[in-house]
Image 1 (spheres, rainbow, N blue to C red):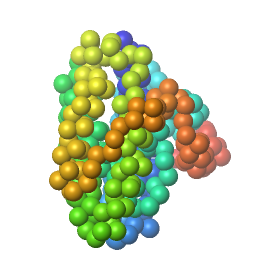
Image 2: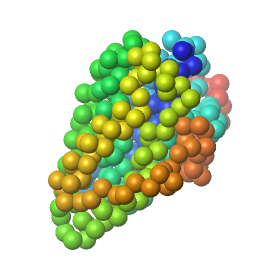
Image 3: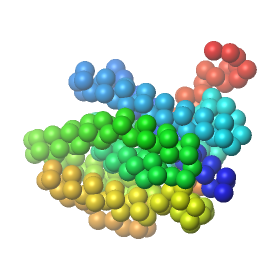
Image 4: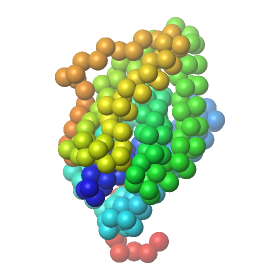
Amino acid sequence: MSNAIKDLLFKMADDALIIGHRNSEWTGIGPMLEEDLAFSSMAQDKIGHAQALYTILHESFGEPSPDQLGFLRTEAAFRCCRFVEQPIGEYDFSIVRQFLFDHAEYIRYDLLAQSTCKPLALLAKKVKGEIKYHVLHGDTFFKQLAQGTEESKARMQSALREAWHQALGIFEKSEFEEELIAQGVFAGEDELKKRWLAKVTAVVEAAGLQIPETIESKIDFGGRRGYHSEYLKQLLDEMTEVVRLDINAEW
């Protein structure tokens, strides 16, 4: 059972760490000061969530320290979905990604608040309150841009089409799926996806846009099994450049 929980913790932590670093790339170049601050704040939250999950792995399951897990693993050892690895692109793509990802993350933590894994359940109850504001941010700007000019509406619909099959990769199942469900650790990716689809569809349609057609063969799977896009190694090289100068240094 410990391997099943560890796999779940790793994919959640890796998602949070990588999307946190991606969001941080808006610092200093946001389209307005408020958004510069918002993405910076959300990035800080995400990296904090990653640290908390890595800490559970370290303290409850004997894995290396959070710093080692975050900065000294190879690309293939990461279990993040490929969606979070993508470059920030234009602002419309980043807003759509944040909107889609944070709805999934909020629902995941909501389900995990009832988990039989007590450290994870306790963390979920704390983290939900923070992610609620991330969801509010994503919903607000998604709607504003979708209901703005004809150009902004078209760009948001285009960004939604670009992101859709990548976002569905969030729900890639692991080999431990049935075990997690049977033991009451997590309700499963199918249940998460069902709730997520209901939430995001309501917001998208209220904003006057359309949910893209899902083509199963186009869903961007692989990240949960260590098969990543070309962008993850580039990001990890940037993230770890300083620490790898002297991995034994005390900061």
